[in-house]
Image (cartoon, rainbow, N blue to C red; front, side):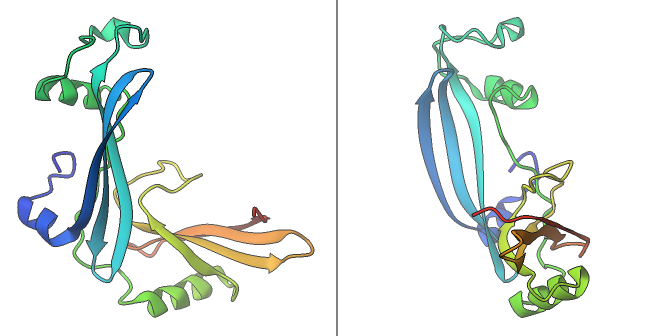
Length: 175
């Protein structure tokens, strides 16, 4: 919430489900929050994760003087997040409405933009593989399509649900 300056009212209106869990691993213990963010007619699965305890046996980040084998307080968690110490916290542009009024309008925009009738939406995400930066705060839909199975030729891409900007390319099919 803090990273995106999300108000409590925006949270209540747009976070429709969430689950909190902890994960013990070689670095220590992390909290993970899986949640669904609803914007307009679309729901996007999201997750954030941050370290809450670092094991003394873990040698990474020794130069940052991070306390070991204790539960971090809020200031230490903020420090770790700001220094990207095993944390993945998303930042969102807080939208109430998408560029497209419904899924059918989105499908039409994908086909019209790419010029491929086989182009279809795959999934909604904030993280776009291959795009730099991979996250820019806007929601995207990944684009897929099979151009020619025998030639192993498929379509991949993404479309920005805020601006309508898109990118698509031919690639090998991955099953």
